[in-house]
Length: 124
Image (cartoon, rainbow, N blue to C red; front, side):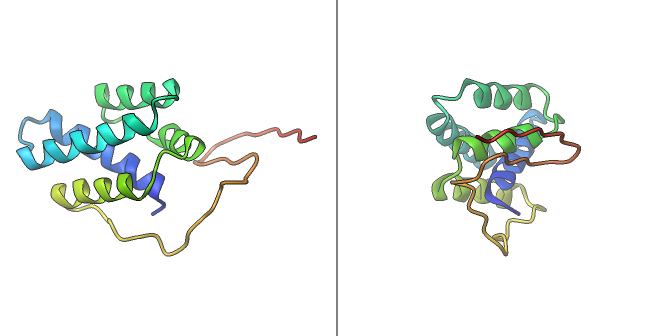
């Protein structure tokens, strides 16, 4: 699983767990730590911050757009990824193994993530 998808999965899972009222204090603390780290990295991206808020209000919301925002804004660093892995490990049942392949999109143009996309590019 790529790091951006892993972080989005951790946020979605953590938001769902936190809403049940059965979340342990360790899970709640781990979720808040991940959220704080992301908010610091996304301070200049109101669109990504809005997507996180929507996910918290509606935990079943698809995370594809959030993953795309993480990639575009380069929000996921090693620290954020580690916080996400820790949260998923506390919740249990999630695959937190590192991805087998790394993808460097730092010089990419016209990148899409997710299914069912339509894209029209004009590079000049």
